[in-house]
Length: 600
Image 1: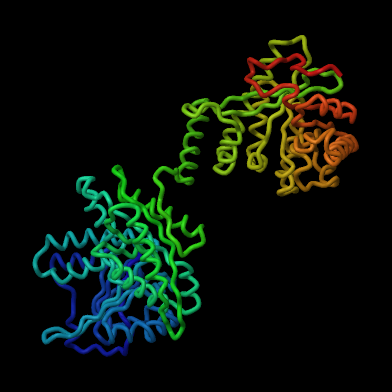
Image 2: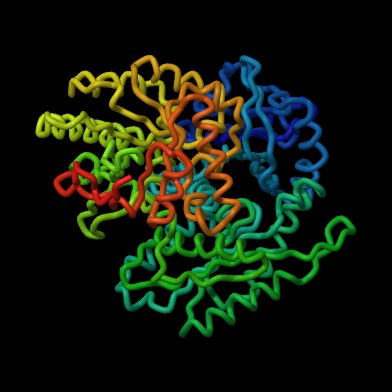
């Protein structure tokens, strides 16, 4: 339950004549009790006279305890004061109170947050005055607006006695109570009518999504009443600035303007005119405020839908905010929405993993003492059905962010270990080939990683001492203690562990000694400067010495020239990989011999 109708607390004096104010009978009575919001009817002095079933269920209070009770007792003391100082004077002066944040205390003492709106019906010759207040829960507001629309349609089919209820429901359902503009449900209904017509009749329709800048700061500093006053001022200016177009207040400080234009030049003029009108100063509580807004503009396309048109304008509005606010931005239909594109890639990658579209290529790692292939590093590729073979930088980050990296990594590990097993069976005369596989940061923190590795090794009957798992230095240093626990668990399986991209992070000699690693891989950015940059040469030499000092082997990445290769041999580096020895290739093209390496 989220929409509650309540009335102001006043002295508990309920004249007998007023006490006869009750809900209509028959079908209208069912409408009263089955409304999607709780509803209370009170006398003008605040004494509850009727309450519907929805409110009884929502509050947990007995109906007999509510009837005759001052309605203010339903609120905590702070909200009683708010109602008495703000809402009650507004009811007496204009008969309407716009949305006010309150809490209602249930029978169990719990507090339920809501947005309160109130309306007073003056007395006539035949009936006494009464007060009605509606409270909407913010997160369910849209849902109940639609339910109110359904209730309105039901009221239209009923007898003439429900005419008054129908009019009230129609207003609440389709219009914002503060500004009188269309609300979200009203805008949706209006757009649905426009898009039900032939497409050519809505061409030239522009939707301008207006979002006030820094509105929260005004609310926080001057109060909600000042914020409401600014909202009303903005609504009045928008209404005066356009010619007969639909205007809506979606929620909070968000507005939508629908305007017919001849071309993009005219829509630019409209957007600029709106900004100029909104920028005019307004004085609230003696303080001059200069409103500003970010406006996103979208023009209808032949295949548009209401939701798509609104989303395009919303995207353009956020683009305007990113450009510095107090400006407008026109949506370009030729540009792909980054968020939509990312979601599409995630979906395609998920299906690609299931359909076996991943490909594992292998790059040789050379023993610099013999010049022969010592091992191979497994590198994943994605054979996309329409975009061709994609490199890791086009999908691995998305897999990491979305969590698909666990399934992707397990597939790569399984394929790499299986391929190494097949190579061993095909070439029993050569020493077993080691295989290296990368682990991502999310894989490293996965509690199931150890069991995944164990299962793959057992299924392929692969010697764990021939498997090297590579973890980047950055991933290790993100949480050293967690990394140490994960590495220790993997080490107990008998696999080898390598620190990848060494030199780019912040690890120290102390941490290197703590981690149970067997290999240090020197980042390619330092290897590239060998022989040409004295600083890079010194760093590479230091990394090799550091690795040997703690009893692990040193591997250089990104070796592309013969000079780099010779320098690494002279420095005593153990292994190397790079284009100088061979590019990553499919398994059928991998050379188990020297892979192009030169003799030591």
